[in-house]
Image 1 (cartoon, rainbow, N blue to C red):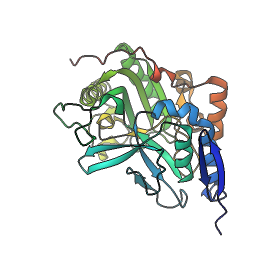
Image 2 (image 1 turned 135 degrees about the vertical axis):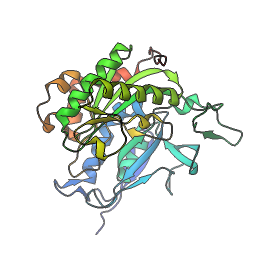
Image 3 (image 1 turned 180 degrees about the vertical axis):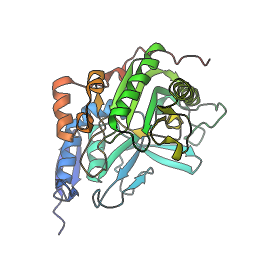
Image 4 (image 1 turned 180 degrees about the horizontal axis):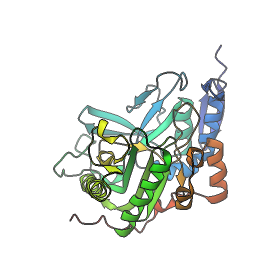
Amino acid sequence: MASAEIRTQVGARELSLSNLDKVLYPLTGYTKAEVVNYYVHIAPTLLPHIRDRVITRVRFPDGVHSQGFYEKNAPMGTPEWVRTVRIGTSDGIINYLVAEEQATVVWLANLAALEIHVPQWLVSTAVPDSKGVIDLPEGEPRTGEPLADRVVVDLDPGEGMTIIDTARAALMVAARLADDGMIPVAQTSGSKGMQIYAAVQPCRTRDIWRYVKQLNISLHQAYPDFFVSSMSIAQRAGRIYLDYNQDLAARNTIAPYSMRGRALPAVATPVSWDEVGAAQGPDDLRFSPEDVLSRVATSGDLATDLLAETRPSLPAPD
């Protein structure tokens, strides 16, 4: 039997929370109430990383043991105070959500939107057309297209690779970004992958895509037994692939501090480079929601360099 709704105040908004005793992670008995509690407390740290970016959610209304689904359009019943933005894509116009306050994050958690994914570009850098639609760029420059303010290098380990291999690759990527004047920020994916971010002056997403693609090729040429430049899954076995397509305007990556819809409740967690270098096993770079709240309380936001006002320009192509 479904539990009764609970009315609660989040900032200036009154929200209805439902089915809080529902187990969303059966292996550990982790409930929706615990998910909501995490997002209530992490929202002030999460919001600066997702504000001004459209949100794609992965929802698991029946728990992670059931099939989740991606959701881009604002769902029916979206409160009028939740900001929406019309984005023109290859699939038509999508009415995306943008989180501007803690209540939006908590409202999404109540929908069992365990995962929050965002692109690297900012809504505020775009110029909507006469119908209020922001068109995403394709290959050629487009007037009014949104600009990205961060690079993401998504490390995709092939079959047989471990989080230790990914950590090694992350250190090598970080060195290249640092050589190019950027400040790299590492984030665990909640599994065996990692993302390396770096803040840059707003620029075309295609320029960032081109930069990371060249980085992928360069690392493969320098370390052919460790990095692979092919998109073929078969050829990735035993190697690390830099998924540069995650920098395209139509793509998105897991947001810092988002939970993951995996068997165990884990969080995509910013980590220090000391932690990356010292990792000896998967548990060293895997963090529960409670771990993350404790880390933030102790060390603050380890991804704060992504929010810096002073940013380097993306290096010019070779």
